Image (cartoon, rainbow, N blue to C red; front, side, top):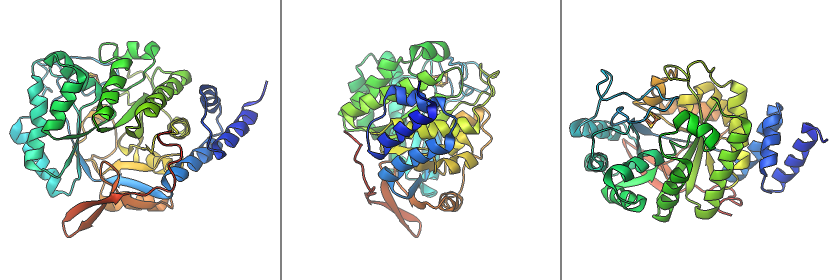
Length: 382
Ligand code: SF4
């Protein structure tokens, strides 16, 4: 039987030739602890797609409510209706947050939250409208596949109609949350009640058909095994082959604190970097891989720029979901700091908007310029 090292050499040949990796290749990468080789291979793909650019954006998060009908095992954010931690933001609070974001130069609002027992779909539509009223030029990236499935249930309309109503209100794209782990062996255990895999993928398929871009995530480092992670990546790659509508993949490191899975240790630095690199290698049709510093920690996220990642996300403000689960990162980092972190890895810091246009700033204002030219997108949309 070939050794893992010999198998890695075959994978190197494929990566250098721009060939697609198989499920078995993914499992070989998972079985190896040679993280430098895996990182080097991921870096080849990363530089092929994104040259030497290291992207970031200036954004703000709004989590309109933490009240949620579901009880996902890993979630420390949710609250019951009568919980003293429960909150729901009203129009004035949303408008104030949108204005603050605008004044601080944010180009994007990232809006996700709980699935409230009593709020009608119209509330979620109004949140988008209120933001656009207060700050028309801000891009609204809102509502995960799980939230959209909830809207389908409460409003009794098909996915397409729900998404169209949100687009009409000003929705610009979908975030990637709620994907967790697609494989039913895991999904049913950690979040069996909420949108199943087929529905999550169908929401994104429909969004892409309607012209929206979206992101995708994977929550790793809990009860899932290597085969579940590779399976997850393969399912995303398949949908991307079909639609080409995904922009960015974000591997999310599990944070156990205050969740119902708090006996599980946090993923290690090796696992973080390996998962980042394997994601870059398997998702040969995704333009971008993000190292979300809020969950990874700033230091690992910075190193990840050499392990397949090309994006550090933003100067996030008001992030509550992962901080509820014990994330020890600050709520935001400054533009100066994020640029320094990127530059220290030898990459060129580039501010982007949500749709990866270069942002140009002058004296308190900004404008989105041309699409950022990457050196090659040979594998994208194949
Ligand atoms: S992860 Fe989302 S759907 Fe699950 S309990 Fe938390 S807020 Fe609700």
